[in-house]
Length: 266
Ligand code: MLT
Image 1 (cartoon, rainbow, N blue to C red):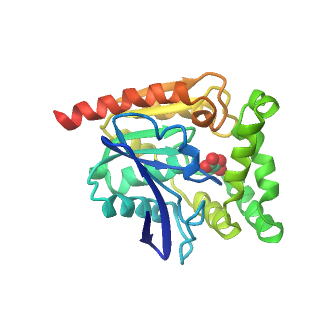
Image 2: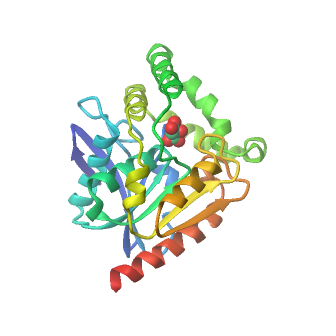
């Protein structure tokens, strides 16, 4: 279905029945990232393409991470979902943490997947602005080829042609203007440590053991900040561990679903 927000007609996939889960993809990805999670039982899966990604057109104004968070909450509003589990991968995690900061009453549970709570360093911001200028000049392909070997493990890169092609073509659906806006938005985000320390809902922090973008140490720090958290390390996974190792991820996510369902029924 299509949901309008901020000048974008967002494409939203919906499947299943049970505890509502809003899945929020990373950069430069799309709702297809969660293809292997849609079969998790006991959940109503709601998966938008964020504005500027997948089949959703960009915002009409320059976005911030907080505006992406408002877009995701607008999806929940359009479906009459007062509370949900917000599950974000990487940039999607930055957005989920913004939702937890601005709309804590909407958060029944939180899953932070291959992400970090810290803001960008000055060096990191500089790299984002350089990447944005280069995308403006020559398009997204250079960034996709540079990021791909960090998204998937060396084993998958060498032996799983189908997964590599799937991931590459998902990344290439991102529009140049969407990627540039998201890079600027990520550079401007603030630290979320205090937000995590204040939250008191069931949560899951998951990370590929070999994630080179948001390494295991980031996950350990976030899980120490959260009061009611399971830390799941996915052995041999890289940045997109949930795509490459769905069985391991889905098992951990099902435990979060059960914890949230218990609290909702209490
Ligand atoms: C992502 O996967 O969303 C990005 O790698 C996040 C980032 O660049 O900080």
